[in-house]
Length: 541
Image 1 (cartoon, rainbow, N blue to C red):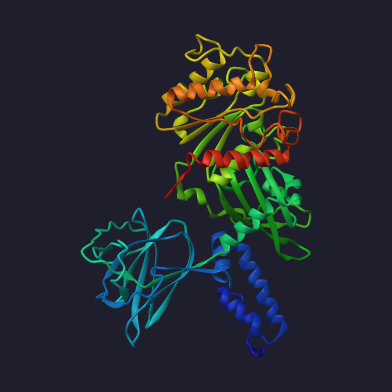
Image 2: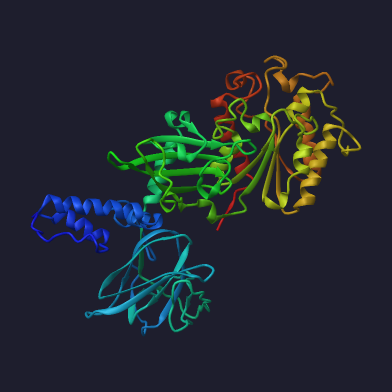
């Protein structure tokens, strides 16, 4: 590197980041290098957060991913595009699109335009370049919807040898502009696919992998806070508030009031006046679904966040996987085992949250310690929870009650009982099933029967499953009641009597002979994810 640029640095001009980088590399005198660095930091501090994220992606030298319209060479032709727009109904994934490669067929330069259009017909991006041969059209944008391409060029490379049902359209207005809505008229009279490569920057995937792994790091899970503004030092944090808690999340992405996030703080500049932090948060379960979010923080010498620049503190959503899923809204109601007792503060442990992560479900929990189908604790039972829930907001409902009805000696009853006429367990199960389907006939309902408990009986008689309570019935009779009522209506019911919680493992997996240990909840979450996933999974759009 030759340091030979002797020109003075003009700080009044709006230099680009690439120009600043070049100055830092080539300036001959140290004072000018320092001026450039100071200017660059000021630019970082004042830039909108979306622009900063774009710069990170644009200048990322690694983890590029290329999606090709054609994997193998099936023999090519060249389309005479006549400089008109051609759209092709092949969808590419959302993400940070760095560039698009298109092969032209001319020895002289020609103009080529490309437009990215989402399924609703909205034009997300339009870029133009002049070149010949294989051209790379820079996009450098976070594209938040799946998209198809429209190409405008005199000619481009394509194939007719693929029977892939890719339709095309040549019906366009005079031109396409960002924000326009385009309604294609798809044609199938001939089938040809353009030779296109869409190049992504995989920064979001890198962050996902990083923070997914961080959920297993004990130091992050022990470093718990409830307000994102309290995460001001480098390292990892666990930011969580359970649904229904009196506390709410502070300064959370999407203004979420509850959920849990793994957070990593990365410092990128510090001096005696302030330090700059990048705060990256990922979540699996919140009121806004699974996603990655990023924001910048400026920490003052007294350890407080500089809140004078609100723009720099705004959260940028990098990725939200739930946007690509349909039929994934699930309501899970249950007792203290569904709540994750005695680890309620560690919301990642509860089996309901694990099911949400494993199956890409957006989970809302309605768990209440001590509740049963019929037994009321703290004013709540399955009946009161179902009565107060609008099931039109959900695609799936999972109920996991019964052990507290057994433990508190509620009347068992018989098939055909109807609550409130019959104040029995059979009657309560019948009531909640009818109530849920009267609210939403399209919902999928799953009953999950109680796991065994070792505070009743012995190993020899099967613990709770084989031991009668004061009303003369066993926990296994509760399971039978759920199965019988569910069968009456054709509702899915999980018989959990044969599960990892058997007579040999029970005492090892329960912390108090009733509730699972931390490892027990992991076992339960994995087991129920497999059972529930065998019946229903979200539809991927």
